[in-house]
Image (cartoon, rainbow, N blue to C red):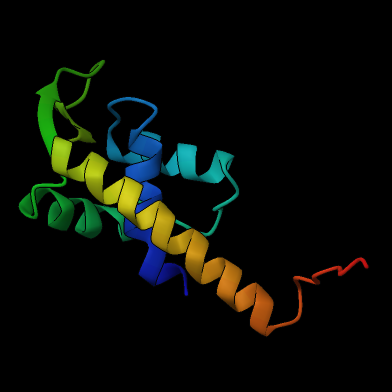
Length: 107
């Protein structure tokens, strides 16, 4: 199930500001997605870049090769907003189907 929403989660952590891959992994872990590793996000970041959802820039790092920083593009911001709305609607529907949402009716 995570595979279908990981793009949305990546866009959400970029809302905190530009980040490189490992930093995004740390942000995801801080938000409770500890099962996501660097190896699984780089292909997604590449696709988000090709799709115009993120913008990139390279910056020098301490002692290593330059890091590639990712940030939301205007299209990525719109996709995040739409995706969050769709996620909330789907979550509410599934909660209702599983009986997790109990409507209380008062006379």
